[in-house]
Length: 179
Image (cartoon, rainbow, N blue to C red; front, side, top):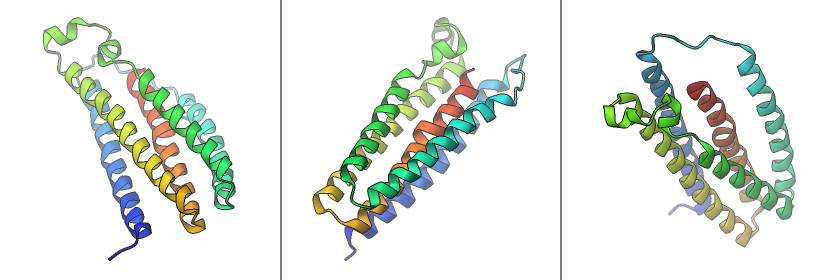
């Protein structure tokens, strides 16, 4: 019989494997959206740099939050979790629909395959963020209830991973895909 800590570690590995597959799907969706395009957008290399700098700054703050969280500062950990979940839910609520992405609502009626692919990607992002938020919140409730230092440090690492994928990389990929 394994401990809940071992189960949580397995869950994180499965979550990260799912993230890898999800990003492979995002790359495939990007190629599918741009495949039939007569005009490809001009490449502006300032965009990845502009997106990367806030991501690095955010990860630095995340590392500090993990350190405080590991030293039993549960209030700081709670505030970090709440800010991560609020940001992630706001981001998923603000993602434009596929009809906005391709510029017409008649694409659905015309059977445009980009509409179907965009709809699938849109719903996958929302569902993925919701599942990650619920899973992270349940693990947080369990950890705070037991007040286990080792699990608290582990949970802080999970918060950084969740924040990096959902709020950082999704935002960059979505902007590159939709703009």
